[in-house]
Amino acid sequence: MELLTIYLDETMMTIHINANMSPVIKERVAGDAAHSFPPTGGLGLNSGLGDVHNLAYKLAAVLRGLGGDSLLDSYEFDRRNVAMVNSQQSVKNGKQIFGLLKAFGTTDSNMEVARRNLYRNIEDRHAMKDINQGIENQREHFDNLGLHIGYIYGDHRIPENASIYRPVCIRGGRLPHAWIRLYSQEETALPPIDSSYVAELSPEEVEMKRYSTLDLCTFDAFTLIADQGTALHWKQALKEMCECLPAGMSYKLKIRLAIRGSDFDLQPGKNGEDWVQLTKLYDGNAILVRPDQHILECFKFPAGYSELLRVLREHLGWDTVVPDWHKVDSVL
Ligand SMILES: Cc1cc2nc3c(=O)[nH]c(=O)nc-3n(C[C@H](O)[C@H](O)[C@H](O)COP(=O)(O)OP(=O)(O)OC[C@H]3O[C@@H](n4cnc5c(N)ncnc54)[C@H](O)[C@@H]3O)c2cc1C
Image (cartoon, rainbow, N blue to C red):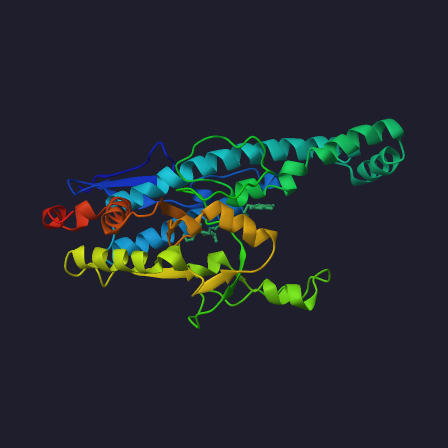
């Protein structure tokens, strides 16, 4: 008789399937199947999309023999805390929007009564105090960029305010955005942004906002971003790293080098100046970005091929997919 044991582990993002004596199969779960939020509180779809953005490149890497089990395990490590934070905010939003509806008087199940309450309350000075407070309480519900793109993988602190988004250039954070112009003719993963529908923007501003630093990253590659002054150093480090890779691995691993000053440059203005200060590429540093646009590591000059190799090896879980790693260890 076939005995099948299926259980969702405590992370709620992995299903363990154990059939008879066969090895346990782990299935990753994303979206509402892993975490359901109150629909009135929002963030459900955003969280689900964030899950698959995180998971897709990891699955692709494992299927291509480029990544090991620990890469898939990092999915839960990354996403579980984001799901927890978002679910708490969603519950809070759900409660607060109900409070606002109560202040309007529109929670009565009889539509006519609800409508009369609404018309009366918006004319009532005392009721308007509660309504205004209720509207103010919606700020984090509708203005929550901090939750959408501010999370840092590996940092499990709960954000003090969902509306505050501070770009950071650290491991686990999303590569900070800045508007750029591209010098290389290589195609970006997505077509250029067309913001011509924004009436407030002049034609020059529309032209400046066509590409973001995030466009430097493609969905199937890691990206190393550095400055022109140290371009040769980082090019050499990548070359030496590829020479160290076990046979067969170097053609599976795709790393793009994006050099500020020759492949792209920042558009003039504060946004670009902030990016320059944040990334400090001018000190010779380099940023290694994952295919999901999150930073894998910020390297300080003069780090080289062995640091690159160590970080990629650890992240991609090469020790389980490359049996002859000891040969590589001897050259490090
Ligand atoms: C009223 C409402 C308002 C919302 N507002 C927001 C919002 O403002 N912002 C936000 O971020 N989120 C919002 N959400 C939440 C958002 O819609 C969900 O989080 C999101 O759709 C989940 O996507 P999913 O792909 O994980 O699951 P689903 O969209 O549920 O997709 C699962 C799919 O699997 C199919 N399926 C199920 N069982 C099987 C089976 N056995 N075999 C084959 N197929 C199967 C289903 O038919 C479905 O098509 C709202 C939800 C509701 C209900």
